[in-house]
Each structure stands twice: as structure tokens, then as C-alpha cells.
Length: 250
Image 1 (cartoon, one colour):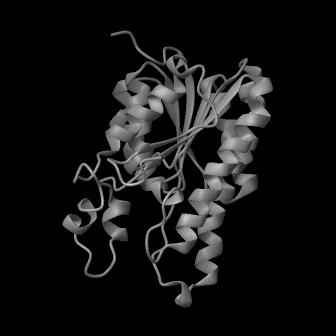
Image 2 (tube, rainbow, N blue to C red):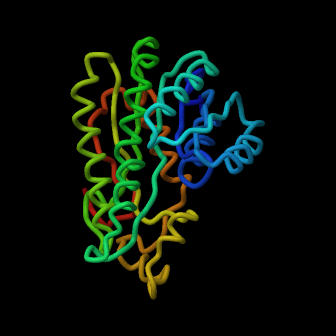
Image 3 (tube, rainbow, N blue to C red):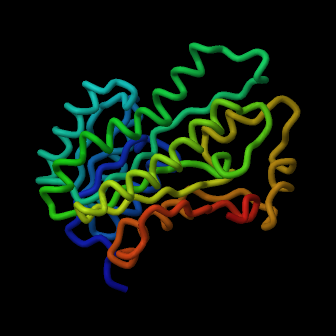
């Protein structure tokens, strides 16, 4: 089967672990050159070293919540790759707490990463994407942005905001031949997911929420992302694709 992303130049944020790492690996296996971006330097270097045999890649340390750092980091990524054809916004954090006990500093940090951060990257990548003649942006939202889950008001709000921002961007950027879509994972077996389980909540409890009665793999989300980055999805923009085994049925 021919590669889906031959000679494409893709930036992936949150690429040091979890879904972001899986997306970077999938893009490399599909023939793309990839810039890995993450704020965790140690894990970023470890991931870059582990994936280096799969294809051309570079690593950029970057906190997506810091607009100035994003502008510089996206510039370095575009320079290293020789341009940009695609962006995957995967950097994200969780916040699990009852609303009445909301830590507002933690709320603002979550919004700064999950929503503002993705928009910082989209804006910084706009000129390189336009220069390439168009391209694709895939924002990693969440099933929690389509159907809420308890004790995560901030997280649900950030992901719902990202979904609507994706749809609005799709309208604004279509004239530049840039497609913008969101992927909405459910429970995916990553370190972040396991850390976010509430007190007394088991893996089996989470499985029971889904029609398929299982937890997803990061590679399954990455496969959907690779599709949306590719020419196979050339008529798809403004979508919010649920990849989660049947909880939201969106």
C-alpha cells in the first residue's frame, strides 16, 4: 500500500508521549518528515531518538501556552523541515476536580494549553501552510467536548471550545486551501489517561461507558489523524471525528 503522506512536512505538538507520539510515528511511517514539539525536553529527546530510524525528523522544545515561544518554535520547525504541509495540535492537560473546589489558576493553565495553545500554533503555522499551497490542521479535542463527563468542567469546556474553534477556522481558512478538522478521542490507554482516573474509578468502570466495552489505543487515534492529514480526506473540513468506541455517537 502506498504511503499516505509522501514528502509531507508535519508539525506535531505534545509529541513526546501518548497520542502525540503515536501521531508523529504514524506520520513518519506514512512518508512524512516530522517536527516533534513538546515542553518536556527529556521526553522529547528520548522520543526523537526512538523514532529517528523511521524517517526525517527534528525536535523543538516549546510550551504551546506561551505565544512568543510558539511563534519561535513553529518558525524553527518550518525551517528544519523546509516548510509545513500539516499541523497536529495534540498538546493537552487534564483537570479532575469538583466544580465547587475549582482551582482557578489550574483552570487558566488548562485553557491556556488546551485551547489557547492550539490557536497559538494554528496562527503561527498559517504563513508556512499558505506558502505550501495549502495543507491540513488536525486538532486533538476529546469526546468530553461532545458529551460531558463528571468533575471535569474545565476540561470539557476547553475541548468543546477547541471543537468550535476548529469549525470556525475551517470556514476562515478554506480560501487558503487549508483544511481544519478535529479528532475527539475517548478513553485511550496513555499515561495521561491513567493519571486522570478519579478516586475509586477503575479501568472496568470506564470501559462500561462505551458501546465497544474497551479502552482505545493511541495508534487508533493516530490512524484517524493520518487519514485527515492525507489527500484521501481532501473534501473533509470542519469535522469533529469521534474516535472512542461509542459513547458520544456524534
